[in-house]
Amino acid sequence: MLYRENGQFKTTYRADQQIFPIIQDKVVILAIIAFAAFAVPMLASEYLFRAILIPFLILSLAAIGLNILVGYCGQISLGTGGFMAVGAYMAYNAFVRVEGMPVIVAILLGGLSATAVGVLFGIPSLRIKGLYLAVATLAAQFFTDWAFLRIKWFTNDSSSGSVSVSGVNVLGWSIETPAQKYLFCLAFVVVFALLAKNLVRGHIGREWMAIRDMDVAAAVIGIRPVYAKLSAFAVSSFIVGVAGALWGFVHLGSWEPAAFSVDRSFQLLFMVIIGGLGSIMGSFFGAAFIVILPIILDSLPQRLGIPIDTALASHLTFMIFGGLIVFFLIVEPHGIARLWSTAKEKLRLWPFPH
Image 1: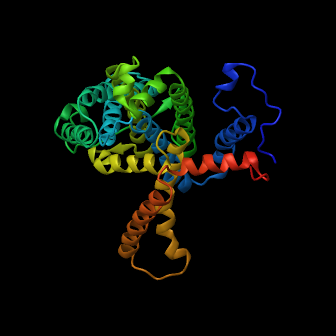
Image 2: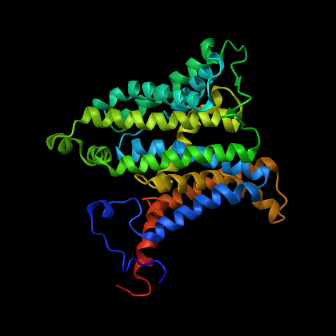
Image 3: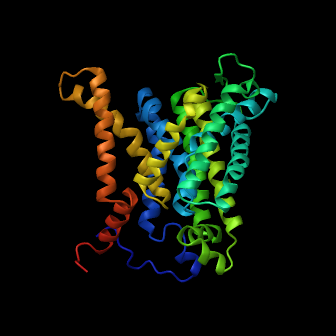
């Protein structure tokens, strides 16, 4: 009875098209953001920040970027890890080579660099699609892995190939403790999630979805496939590049190209598919599933008092995790976001059957 829209009248098109048409949705989302910003830093432990919350936020941001490309525009990409690497390494170079470079500007420059690389490797999408496009974007992953491992300029002539960042601060505020890093990431995620939601609601998002549904029909009604596809690659790569810079600067602190391997690309693709294609909220659900579930499975035998070898436990985690992914995709191929929307629709009618 609490989740009803009785009496919430829409008198303008703008009111009818707002992000949260039901007031309860707006209140719940604002309450979640307030809880995450004010209560979590006081309640969470250092382990919770480092192992779950910070990776969850950054990977959610990367999943949002990938969802724009795969879920909204229908362009399959297996090079997301490479675009994250571009964002991380170019943000690092901007930060260490330019004296007094603000960290936020360096991160955004990393995102812009990833945009350029994403558009470059998105050009084949104008001629190919499906698995062929997936292979083309996979080439971007292999190329970036090679470039950041072999070209010493990207690593500031580091002999080991690894780079590190320290002394990160924003407007004089040091970003050193896990709680500060968490809030820094949370600010980026909230801003970019809002921007992405507004983009997909506007005419650009409608062009992306028209290309996704049928690109030939979209071209017939006046949508330019070149502009729509390349703009999707640009926006997606920018958000993914920012997420990669945050992954390096905030979560890792010190990293090498293996941190952005092809495994990362597949992990992000799983997040988008499990969470829900074409859903900003689904990106958060998918990230939570991928980040939290393996930790729970790893600790479950110990909590249940089952004596088991560490290596066997690790293999069992992968087996159970993979099985759950397959089971979930069979039961609900549209992702967790679809379950969420179905539950909301039923709540709007409960307790009435119609």
